[in-house]
Length: 140
Image (cartoon, rainbow, N blue to C red):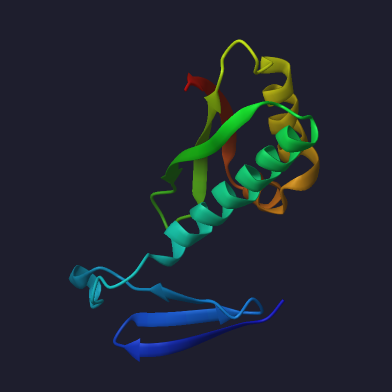
């Protein structure tokens, strides 16, 4: 995988990887940025959510679990001192569908497989952060 980062203005940067999609990154105005994009560490946390979210969705689809959609919420804490790594991450999967048809064991197994086998981001985060996983089934 290759990534290129280009400076746009001040601390406003754009990045592009092999998928050829540009992402805007920036810092807050209080530190010299333009507040024009996501902070790099926000993107790192989004990457974790996307990685584990895609795993869980894919596994539930393979299990033929009758769900409508899955949303993922992440809450994180960072170290006080530099480097300000993530120290705690709470991940909550919101599984939408018919509560009577969705088996909790399928959701739990999908989360477990993502956590222990498939999600590369989770594996990296575990080096510095305590990750906790939760889920809710939301009736639609």
